[in-house]
Image (cartoon, rainbow, N blue to C red; front, side, top):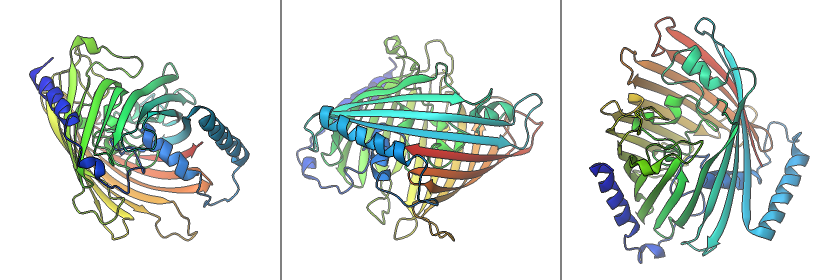
Length: 435
């Protein structure tokens, strides 16, 4: 284990041993509104919270859903199971259909994929208390319709470094156990930790307004992959909350992690990160944290790439600055930047500026809709690649109760790995429902 990883591990131990007697008295109105370690909408704790919230929302373009009967039976079944066993269950289905205006010769220009997430939570100690603890499990499945998924349209058909559809490509085998971990504590308690099979890029540098299943689509627009993230695997992350506006977190996980199995933590290669979160100028209680990260990756045992890691030893830093722009918190601006060193991450540098507007004015006066625009830049670590730019605009609205539809347009400028295409457009239609 490298000295830098040992230092981060010692820091994590110190964080988890931080005195919390005074913190336990802290009152946090947002304590139960999402997972304290992650802002990613598809992280298990946040997904369960989204499902509970969506069950109460009936506003939609069409008030009668063709899935209404199925949903009602599913909700009743979940409640019966919870009362009998204490298990909380949730299911999300997200389907993306995408087409691109140009493709390299012989490659596809359309694709469609479904992403399924089934989550389970079981509180085991101190239920209902700030220092509660329990087990989370997430089963994920992805399958294509035809030979090509939308993610491959960007990476293969366009030879793009930034992609056009993060997370929308088939798995082989179709289903895998993405997360399986114990989580203990809360923001209200002033401390929290998670240990088991975890997903670092769904924890660090995340935002509730940036996710391929709910908002923006391309890899460069949804993840800071200049942070050299390993894949889902064995690891530990913990955080302390001195108050509601600040947290300090540390993460250590297996650099050889593989979402299809449990990696090889015994090889002694680790990914370690320190994250500081600050609400710089919150205007409402729902304000998100700005996050600043320093990380090191020991690389993989065989030197082969996986997820955002190139397999090489190296380090870097990254940030996500998130700020409410209006007093009601409906308009939010997000700036993201990451820089890696020693060719340790698939992106040498990346930057992005995103804007979202919740419940924008529209002729139909829909509620729970969302408008977003973003401009992203990526500098790939691959020698000879060129700077790539991506502009995206989307509009998401409830087409039926608990069924969201999203229309998205992307302009990909100078795909990094080819000079045969200087510009291409990507048109997307996404449907998402939860049970």
